[in-house]
Image 1 (spheres, rainbow, N blue to C red):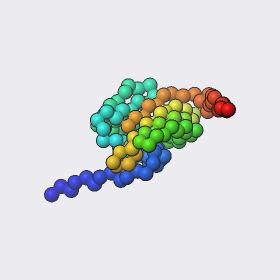
Image 2 (image 1 turned 90 degrees about the vertical axis):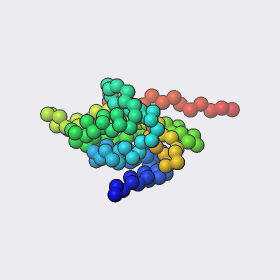
Image 3 (image 1 turned 180 degrees about the horizontal axis):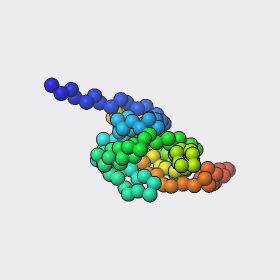
Image 4 (image 1 turned 45 degrees about the vertical axis):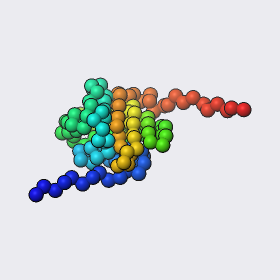
Length: 148
């Protein structure tokens, strides 16, 4: 008799979901990575320079292909957050460390992660990443204005 798949664990906050997402990338763990995604059919993912990938099966295939080269050493940095009761958007600067013929190198990726609060907790519904440059490390931030 087949055992039913247990329901995904509740994830308490968008930050917890994001932490699990980046841990899964760093470990090359496809099951852990897919556990952070929503069950919604319209989830989407865009990798730097790649097409829009829609749906859990397509997203899983895209990450499986990436993991065939090993784990992805992506570290989230300079996370900017906007959150409501049931939606959170994180703008993330990712430092990705890769091994090259010249030794270890760092690449920068600018990503947006969108989370929704579901009955299973906070889940990723969109990850959109674009190639970055070392200039992204220096953010251009508008100074807060004071209202009188």
